[in-house]
Image (cartoon, rainbow, N blue to C red; front, side, top):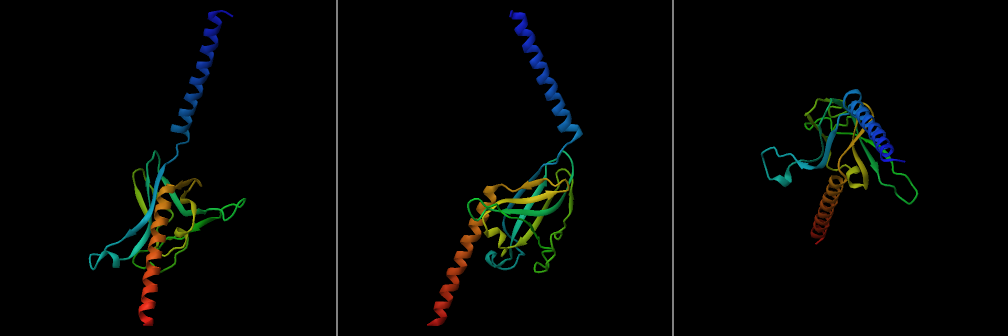
Length: 187
């Protein structure tokens, strides 16, 4: 083989790569663009302006923002629990948000809290859950929302772990306070 033969082979290979990348760009940008949602999860306090912060209502908040390039519709909040043992699969579940912060004890089902919600590019939306929710204290591997195309958009695992750690520490503190109150009442 001569140098011209090697040059021809390299040219044909580079032309194939160029055609493939052009096809991928056309497919992903114009024919089938997907909206990207950024989802966050954490515990929040809603301060109504009266009284100390530790006496204000607390909620779990899932915040999402549509980063485009198209609008999308959020349909449900979902989670996946970590497997209980070796060789087992984790369970998937739909999570029920609070219908309204004015009536947080009113059960609304999986389509409460404004779901399904259409999000334009750049628009944000929040879902709230009761602070006492057991799902946030479990070992979760995924937590997020599903869109109308059945694509999952999840909160970072670091947000989920940080919130779980905060909730468990708060539960331990409440448990210690309750034990001290019982001991005090017994004397």
